[in-house]
Amino acid sequence: MSELITHTVTDWKMHKLEVDAKCHACDGSGVYDGMAEREGFGVQCSRCKGDGHYIHLFTFEEFEGKKKLEGVKRVVEHNPGIILGGTDLEAFGGMPYEDWWNGKKFESGMENRTYTCPAWYYQKGTMWDECDPAGKPYSACLMFDDKALCWIKWDEEDSSSRP
Ligand SMILES: [Zn+2]
Image 1 (spheres, helix red, strand yellow):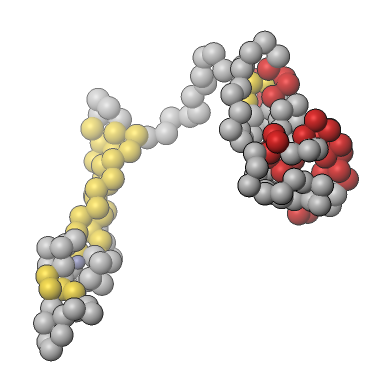
Image 2 (cartoon, protein in one colour; image 1 turned 45 degrees about the vertical axis):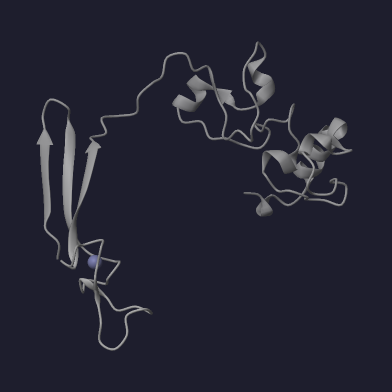
């Protein structure tokens, strides 16, 4: 068993965690016996300098509750590469920050349906026969102006195949 050492630097509320770990590079042996090492040769492991183990040092800050951000008004589940902003925040989907803060979950309809199609939003490439050949930007699809129809189709399809 590895020995765990924790100590707190009180001013910063930072923790340090040191773990004595077996060296994966040499499987704890301290030497490589690889393809180029023949006839009984080994090479000292460069990762652990031959010790067979090394100290992993993690530093981390203690979590003291979720932090609320000033200035955030709306939260989206993910952003498939669209500049979000402007006056009509709702057009980008998502939900008000307050709702998100209070634990509301994302649901169907909260995607960025104004500016992206289902294949774009969910990064599915060519999803249906109507989707334009792959290799083009999603916005160049012949269906893109009618993407509301694609969202209807998306809603009608079995939700079990969704991410
Ligand atoms: Zn090693």
